[in-house]
Structure formats: C-alpha cells, structure tokens
Image 1: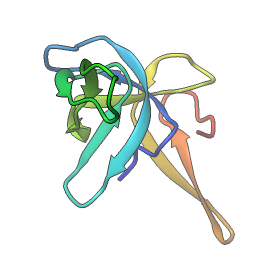
Image 2: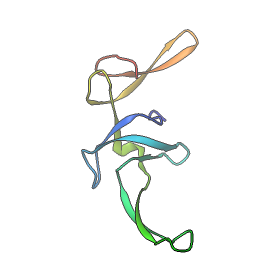
Image 3: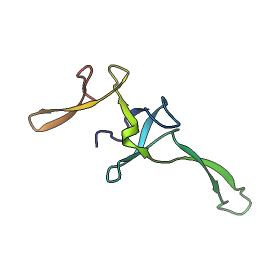
Image 4: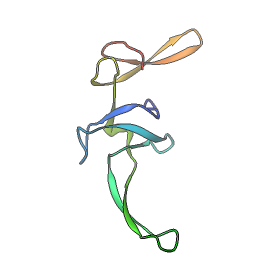
Length: 101
C-alpha cells in the first residue's frame, strides 16, 4: 500500500471530495484508511460514570485507498507515487517533481 500513516491526502471521490486530511490509521489487508475529519458519522455514547451525561460523538469511518491521493510536501499538489531504490533502501517518490515523500 502506497499510503502510510501520517501522510496528508486529498479525497478524490465520494461525498467528501476535495477535502484534505491526515491519515490516522491504515488497514492494508482490506485496502482502507481512516482520515481525520473525513467520512464522519455520529455515534451515541453512553455515560461512563454516574452523574456524567451521555453525548453524541462524531467519529471518522474508513474509506477506500483508491479514493485518496497523497499530497506532495514539495509540490503541494495531489500526486501519484512511485518507488526509487538506492542500495538497500526503498523510497517513495513524487511522480511530478521527483521529490522524496
């Protein structure tokens, strides 16, 4: 999977199209990611202690990796990702500017 935790991504399809956010969690086996403030749903939460009130919390649900593109730090635009191998190390590279991600 080319998208990693901590990357800034641009959503390219769905109801949250053109929103940017940071990847919080990655699920490589199912091909999904959780992006902060994207694909929000409301969840009713019970009070944990006595005297505390219940509340409605907004949580981010997973979205497909195919509906997100990584934003290059150097270019500042959403790009495709390639790989570059130098010796023993493998780097992710921006396809537009060639900068390392």
